[in-house]
Length: 161
Image (cartoon, rainbow, N blue to C red; front, side, top):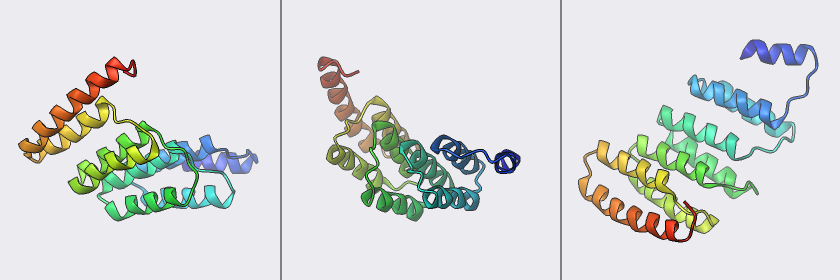
């Protein structure tokens, strides 16, 4: 990735949001949070607007690294921006909180989705069920399975799935 960055700089290629998103995601997946954060700041300094893809990459990397405080920082960033969020972003958030066993925060994502006009989908519920199952929280799994099945049924009836 560093070689690609150097090549683009050497030949004066302009970086776009796609360029930044690919690099941020690559460094995040590699666990290089310092470089990922540097690129995110650089993106902002160049007035390139982060989007849902950018934010998913940050949340995923922080979730894998167990950095709940950093995810909360991303959420503060979102509160002060006009980024349009989608269900994919919220599913990423659910997964990150579930990996870190931050169950209260994971459950709060459902309320955030409602506030932002996004509906949970079967991936949202399956991700939550998986997190609860791994931690042996069987009562939560049963409760969520009941919620998700009724939610899926109404979504199917509404033609959304």
